[in-house]
Amino acid sequence: MIPALALLATLATCVNQPADWPHEDFDRIECPQVYRIHGNAPVHQALNIVLLSAGFTEAELDDYRCGAGMMVEALLEVAPFDRYACSINVYRIDLAAPRSGLNFPDSCGNQVCSHTPPVWPHKEQECRDYAARAPGGLQGTAAIPQGRHTGNCINLDLEPRACPLEAHACQVFWPTGTGLRRLWPVSTCAPAADIVIVVANSGVWSGGGSEDMHTPLAMTTLVGIDADRTRGRLLVHEIGHTLGLMDEYAQTTAYNSPSEEPAFHEDRNLIRVAENGQMPEIPWARDCKDNQGGTACRTICNPDGCDDCTPSEGDAWPLVGLFEGGFYQECGVYRASQYCVMEDANEHDFCPVCQNYIAGIFDHMGMKTCPAGTE
Ligand SMILES: [Zn+2]
Image 1: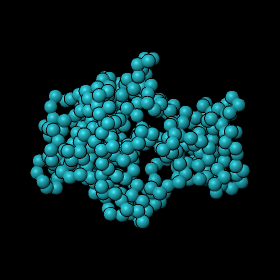
Image 2 (image 1 turned 180 degrees about the horizontal axis):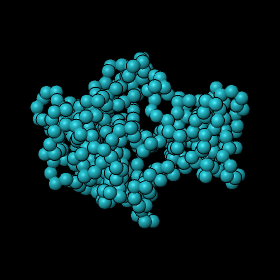
Image 3 (image 1 turned 90 degrees about the vertical axis):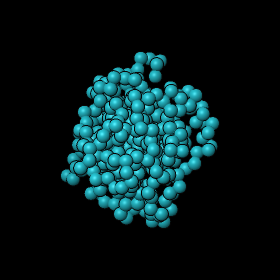
Image 4 (image 1 turned 45 degrees about the vertical axis):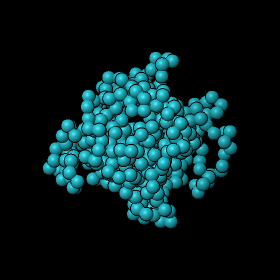
């Protein structure tokens, strides 16, 4: 378990009026039903993931159950999560919203934001297949003896920031302070929570994740987990953020100014050249590997807008080295590999350096790898 400061917030009583957070204690008796959908490891030696539903009505909860379950299956196939699957517990909290969907604005710049939650009739067979192979079926196994079965009492009606400031897309997706204060107390209903993941009922393909809070939080949408090929990747990209990994892509539409960007950390998956031109220490220096079996950290500069850069052929690229571009900058920031899920959540899995980083955290947490052939 990641040592985490519990955020002491409060929860609304079962009345339809704005909550007065600072003055109300969260009563555990209000807990919604929690299900165990993967793992049974001792919580102190496990990564405990808690899934929460947002914007699903009672009638839509099966879509959430199915989407969340298939997303977790996909997560556990991505390295290094596959090796540690026996030390990962996943709890799903079923929370019905009073109405379907989220509070998106109508549009953002030229883009129409989709209020309409996706409909999953085409998933019927896929969900039946999932239910047949999942431990405990579609529902899972109750992880707390009894909880309220949803209803409208506990409202996780998040207000996502879908079009912040000058943004021109509906992609940025993060709850407001009120949403966060509702979310954490509810997550404490699970036996343990190291990462909270909100699955939102939305037709916008989007996700977000941050380590800068306790408990670290990630969000993804039902549309974001719709496709087989990307549902695990979008999730692991956002979980990567909750574990401290930074975005490896050079472009951004998510932040209006550097002051909005997350903090840069020198000891993880990126390095940044100092203002005096000095290259910092490379945290992954021991892992460098060129395509000839050498171990020097070769640099591949970015020809897109960086001075004095001659493009180099892909077949000459090192497997692990220094690739220019990352953390929303074309130049002066270096990542370890050309391809990584932190660079592109559509196409790739974790690069070797990000895998090692995560495995290091898991080892530090006391998580065990699965005996061969059991994961
Ligand atoms: Zn990476």
